[in-house]
Image 1 (cartoon, rainbow, N blue to C red):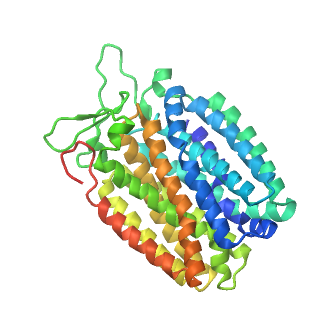
Image 2: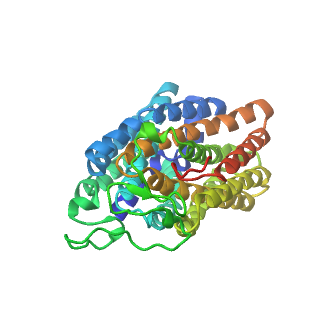
Length: 430
C-alpha cells in the first residue's frame, strides 16, 4: 500500500510546479505571453482547480482510494494531452487548470488518503519514508524535463508524460490498492489481530509523546485523549464539524502558506536567477537542490512528527520558510540560491509532514477524504496565489524584495498561530 501510494504521488510530477516551471520560457516564447500574464494564468487556473477537490474527496470516501486513484490517473493523463495540444493563451489557462486539478490536487490527495487509511500511530514515520522516495526520485526531474523539452519539444514531452501516467498508475491502482486494512482482516499500522474473544487494545505508547493523545487507532475512527485525567473524545468529525474547530483553520493556514511561498519560488526560478545572470540550467539545478533537501529532511521530519507536538514543530517549519525567502532574495550565486532552497525544503517538509499526520489524527478516518480534500483545496489556492505575489513584485518594483517582505510577514503570523494548536475538543482554546 505504501509503495503504491508513493508511486502515484511520484506520477503527479508533470503537474507540480517544479516541472511546470520548465515551461515558463517555452510558453512565453511560443505564445508571446508576458511574465505577469503567465503567472496570472497559472494562478487563476490553480485557484479554480481547487474548487472541485472536495467533490473528489467525497467520492474517495464513498468508493475508496482504489477506484479513485485509477479514475484520477486516467483524467490526469488526458490533461497532459490537452496541454500538448493548446494553441493560445486561454488554452494554456485551461491546460493549467486540468493539470493542477487532476495531478497536483486530486492524485496527491488520493495518495495521502490511501496511506492514512492504513497507518495511524506510525503515520508520521511512514509519511517520512514516502517523502524520501518521492523527492529522491524527483531530484533529477527538473533536468529530465528540461532535456526532454529541448530534445522533442514541450508538446511531445507532455504526450510522453500522459502515456507514462496511464501505464504506471492505473494498473497498479487496480491491482495493488486496497481501501482499508479491515477489508483484509488486518489492523492499522500492521498491529496483530487479536483472537475474536479478546477485546481490541491499543498498542502501548510512550507517556508524553504525540501518540499518547491517541487511544484506540484500530477502530474506524481515532480516539483522542484531550489531556491528563480527562476522558477520551471520539474523533468522528464530518467536514462541517471539522471546519467549526479552531484546529482546522490553523492547519489550513499552514497548508495554505507553505505551497504559496514554494510555488512562487519554483515557478519564477528562471526569471529570478536571470536577473543575476544565470540561465535555465542553473535554475533547474537549484530546483533539484529543493527536491534533494525534501528527501533529506523527510525521515527526521516523520520521526519528530510521531514524538513532538505539532505546536512545537509547525512554528519551526514556518521560521525556516521565512529565512529561506530572505536567503533566496539575497542569493548572489547558484550555491546561495541552492542553499536557500534546501532551507526552504526543510521547513516545507516539516510543515507538510506534521500537518498531514495531524489532519488524520485530529479528525479521524470516516470523513477523512472530504476533510483532507477541503484542506488540500486551501493549499492549492495558496499555490495559485504565490506567483501573483512575485509577478506583481516584479511588475511594480522591478524586483522581488516586495514579495520577500510579504512572505516573511506571513510566515511570522502563521508561526505564531500554530504555537497554541491543540486537538479539537481538548478543552484548550486556540
